[in-house]
Length: 170
Image 1 (cartoon, rainbow, N blue to C red):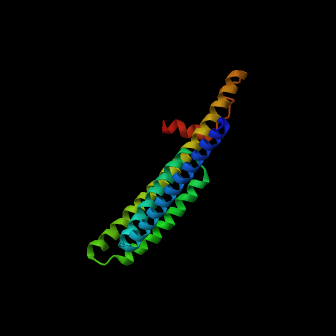
Image 2 (cartoon, rainbow, N blue to C red):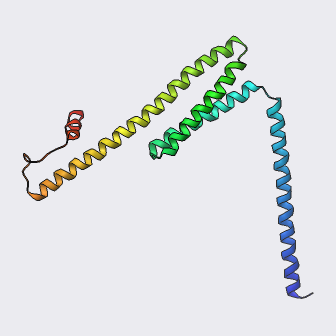
Image 3 (tube, rainbow, N blue to C red):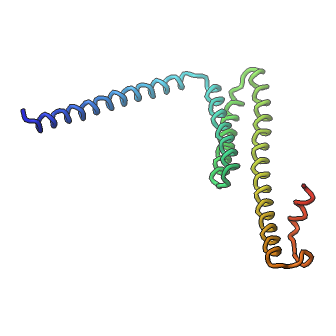
């Protein structure tokens, strides 16, 4: 056998090994997915509703934190979607609550969720207000800086009302 033929055969063996490995992984993942579906079908629907509410609560927290980091409207849309989904699964849980303990937990959950979401919205609103205040304050400083370097008298300067608000707060 020539060297080029050996290289071709070894390359073919590598490709076939790769395909065999991908096939085995695909088979195992399909088997795992089928097993998960079977377990989910056998489980308590109440438990499924609780898991979904947990996912939506985590999504809400992530949307709030992301919105605080970056004021992109997509995060508020995510927050609204998670709120709707949570409400849907909460109603499912409430309908499935058959013991007094489950009914009490459903009531507590509603109160805690409402407080959690209100706190998140409050944080987002405070971030918006503080960002607006910072922008306003920066504009005031630029105006003062321009006045200082232009030699204009401080008495002739017109300072925006937001500067007065800042002074009162600090």
